[in-house]
Image (cartoon, rainbow, N blue to C red; front, top):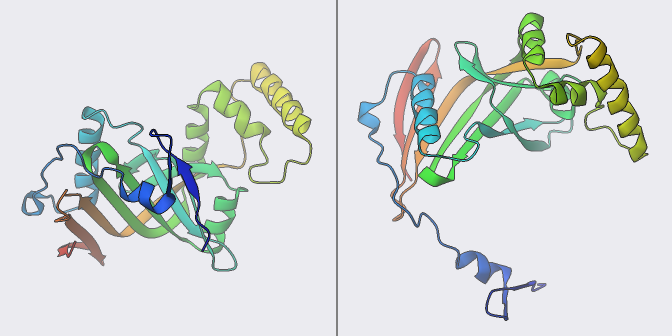
Length: 229
């Protein structure tokens, strides 16, 4: 087995394993979580936890992992931003021609993961995913900052960039188009919603007595169940 050395503050080297085992975990006060006091639907609890994360100063609490499956059945994941949570589901936006756009078109299932380090909390969302109506996608695109609209119009997201100057030329063309017409649309920009079949709320504990509450959908009804740590 190859031993990889990593320099530390003491001018000596340790294995990556030893380095990782020496890192502190949950070395701060964590909030309490009382599953008995939770609402009947997971979206209500999620919004409450999200608000608490914002109030606690969690960095980018709307950042989440999106996991999908490609045509070969291999998983793929990336970090992006949550756009909205409402009765249509947990929403994100991307290009329909991107890898994730193509993957959800082929397999309409996805998982989302939120990790709020400062609070020792995770939320896991699993379910089906579908594109929302074109009006929602167009409105979301118009609400983006100019720089984001320019980047979206210029990008062939996830395609191979054979010549870096091609990107600069595409950005210049898109910038000119937006300057001439701020309402220039982006046909591929799409808002997707994950309709959950299960949502798990995880509260970490320094003694590994983690509290796990899972909401599981059955028809139109949500059932709550505690899970072992």
